[in-house]
Image (cartoon, rainbow, N blue to C red; front, side, top):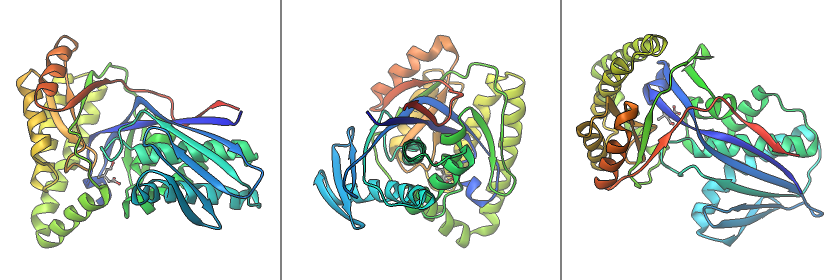
Length: 327
Ligand code: MEV
């Protein structure tokens, strides 16, 4: 038996995209996790398998040979994981062969931080197996490096929450700080099923900002105000205000062009069914939306999202970041 580690998925409650330009954002770890099971091999190869994506392949002298699944997809999922592994083996000082099996309940390319959760879980498991002491800061650093190869110029919010869990107020220049969230936040996630690339969505906002900097800067300042007010609303257990702020945040994201028809359908359906607020979460352009609900409305909103063509599920905050499950 090898070492098993896991890390949580996330939802961004407020501030995605604008966070890339230094504005604050609020992110929650949720009760869906990616698991990595790592064991050593006799040879020096690095074998990877993603059970949920039906992909497998083997790196030999740095070259990936696909055994199962689409080559392009395997490359895009496995290369960042390999980079994380290489960083840890560099610390270890010796090239060893590994079998890595990834099992994840996190929908991929959906805005829920699946790639960061996988990278953090793999980094923790490999560190534990080879006996390289990895602090949470080390795991964050390694998974952030991996994330850069996936998303181009990420803010680092996904690896931070996958590593530390809980709720964070995140900002690129000042770092992040844990937020005390004592209330239950009944959240429904609606997956549009439309896969998209975070890198492209971030580029889209960058191009718009270059073209209309005066306008987009004002949208960003408004988004900052939304986040700061949301911090107070969370402290005051004020769900109604949180909902309103989510609606405003979504309007700002719509303004910078990262919503799409599939998201608008689900967001409108959730609001009509009684959601206190609803917005896209993550990079947009498809992926997932979130709806804030009173507990008594959960069922109605779940049903409405489903009827509108989405795949809904209830998400709860989890305090546990990356952790070793078995060694
Ligand atoms: C991705 O989960 C959130 C974005 O803000 C990109 C980033 O912060 O790296 C769209």
